[in-house]
Length: 223
Image 1 (tube, rainbow, N blue to C red):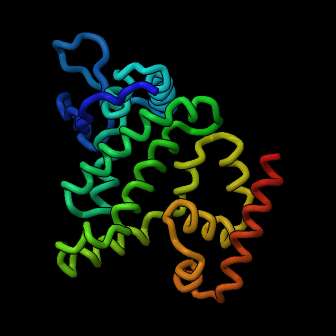
Image 2: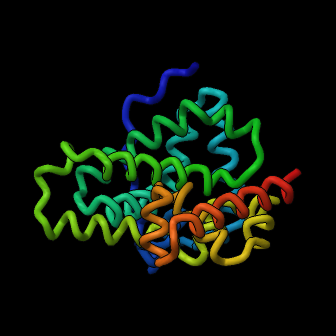
Image 3: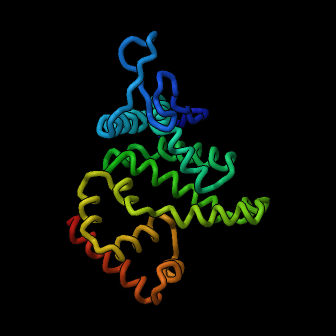
């Protein structure tokens, strides 16, 4: 296994040249003119695929490329979930170490590199959320904000981010809304069956049935 780079620091997008700081900007052409354009999603995804391949083959520039492409968004996601900037930075660094270590497995599989990276970060954030000792210094308002952020982890389009444009995305799209939402709550946001039951306002048996039926449909669709 390749040793991970010593440190990972998210790099904010450069707003020079009028590009929205929230967007990914890349320099094209004459750098002295500061010409920036926003990359389209397809090109960005190809660059992320190459970056993950670099990580799998032990080249630290892979992590640099991931942070250049998605660093501000990744840190923003972690901050929305964890509220505290220090915890968000810790979660992002831990996630990048995991990306580095597991990149070879991702390259052997099939799926969106972007979705895979975001899923690793989300899972790390959820682990920190479950660490009661880690959060003992937070105020009640901060804890409430964290819980609200956790509830918003699964948006209507969340499955598209995680699955990308491959077969998994098509199979998730084919599920009915209750089954898809229950699967995402369980396997993306980390909710227990009981929490899904309470959140969706249905009996526990119904929530379990949604998940069981949805997973069976996914297996059949993917086979």
